[in-house]
Image: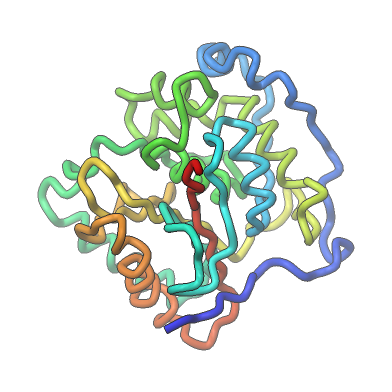
Length: 279
């Protein structure tokens, strides 16, 4: 059954919200990606990160600049059976309603009671959204997809450098490292105010936004579906799946844990990471 996803935060006039006018130039990020990671301690910009619009063009602009491999791209997702290419991961934007908060908090509380629950996902590159990031949930969700999707990056990119450098780090330490990386922030902020965006970028120091991004990935190593949300205690395991069944099983998870909790809301949107095979 096909189901159309409205694009929740597009379509408003850019004058509806205060726009952050600070633009960055980040043309040298690819020059020496390892240097950006190794020199993180020299970061001087500790201001909040700008929010990314739920827009594939915006996410692709950020992801490609930090090292998303060729032939991978984010696209709008409209429902089962519509995509021409298989989905390798999903990015869900959902409203921060009381009902959803209560449901997801109860789920997390129950999972934390399971002994050794995080052992099954310790090989994943999970990044905590540490204090000071601001509205960076979209950026972190995008990085979770790129860092944990097989073949989506290589070691010569900023993404590969970040993963290699933080391989033995805790999720908290990864979050603190990412927060210090001016280069990643520069690219993210530039994408946030991109001409591809269809709405005004909320102010850097404005009120907290009432929507949140979460990633769903298919882990090739364990052949399981994981939900990655930097505000949670760790990856959420949604069970085993083949890549062929990943789209349908993830859709069932999203229905159960999000859409059915707020069945009348039109404030959801979904993007998928796809891969174009070489001809």
